[in-house]
Amino acid sequence: MNKIFIIIQREYLSRVKKRSFLILTFLTPLLIAGIYAFMIWMIMKDDTEKRTIAVINNSELVKPVKSENFTTFKYLQNVSFEEAKKNMTANGYYALLVIPKDILKSQTAELFSYKQVTIEVKSDVGGQIRDHIEKIKRSKIIVESNIPDLEQKLAATRTPISMRTIKFGEGGQVKESSTEIAMAIGFISSFIIYMFIFLYGVQVMRGVIEEKTNRIVEVIISSVKPFQLMMGKIIGVAMVGLTQFIMWVVLSGIIITIGTAIILPGIDLDTLQQAKTLSELPQGAGSLNPDQFKMAQELLGTFDLPYVAGILGAFIFFFLGGYLLYSALFAAVGSAVDNETETQQFMLPITIPLILAMYIGFAVAKNPEGSLAFWGSIIPLTSPIVMLVRIPYGVPIWELLLSMGTLIGTFLFVTWIAAKIYRVGILMYGKKVSYKEIWKWLRYHN
Image (tube, rainbow, N blue to C red; front, side, top):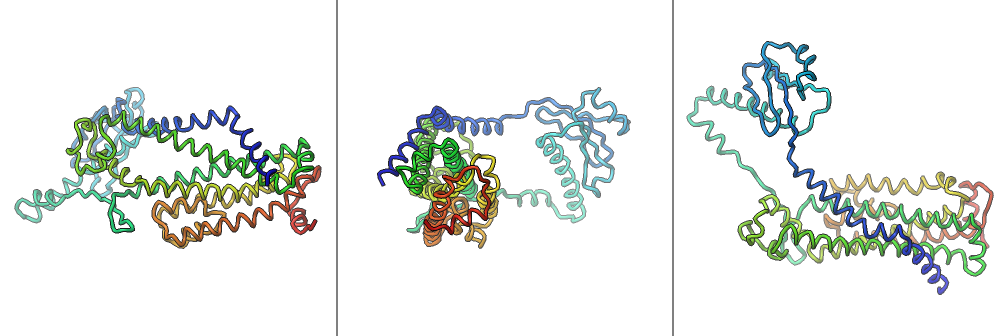
């Protein structure tokens, strides 16, 4: 056992001391924060591009579309479509809008351009035409019905509804929740596990191949059993990944705390969570609009201490379980080949379950209680990813324990199989290995 600890220490220290590890560990939280900040800035940034759209209005029913923001509409009189199309570039028109004469019947207008129009322009133009057509139809119905003040009565029936999602706790208490946040947490967590399993599993495989091709392993196994060497490498690299993840959590927490203090100066999170309305917040929250206040309430209601602790605990367990399971397979593959180019035929059966698990995750987000979600979170080859998508929605404790138990049992079984391949393949040189050859190794008894 002491030899395994020595190998773990060597694998761990040799990696955490690398400059690439330090750079990735400290810059990743800043990079992630920068990407999200940039995305939010892009979403909130107003479209200030000046555009002129030429309009051929063949319908007497549709009134001129109003110019809004930085988009201007120029109505063409006595100009054919071909002529307008020919002179679009010369006149500096961004697009050409054609409103047909029978628009009430066809319910379609056409927007021509030499490049793809933006979604905001399409939505703006289509929304104005749709609203005007609806007004025409509504006026026709009002005239035909001959009911006094019908338009005002219809307008009074339009009621915007805001949907809140609230979860019951085990003790009957209630708290604000968010389906969108739960889905985001599930997908982000599962993607990180997917990335970590590949990243660190491949590191184990490459380390085995490197020691094998350099003949270093011949010296090492003179004093260490092949199983001890394999387990030492797997656990050592796992500790590297766990260290990196913990540092990401700590650094991200610091960045979020600093960012919150900058965005909401003078407002603590407890005050923000307990406030029922925006007016109850201190003067410093004047920059918050109702939508931002609602989002902040949902975030704080979702990320309470028990919830965060449960998510982190599940993440660490399924990260370690999934990594240990797949790393044993990666180590076996590395021991069976002489170089990395020969690993492709053996990598496919390992990567298919991981890729399949990511696709199952999309189905789980739609139906986290379905049979596909259940079996995907129980089968060990997919459970590390699928279960992380399900957990934010709430998983019965017996299903969680069953998933954990099968993952541990499968890891022990796969490690036993991988060790049989490893102990033979680690000293096998110059021979291209096939599945038939590996099957012989599994049946070999020393």
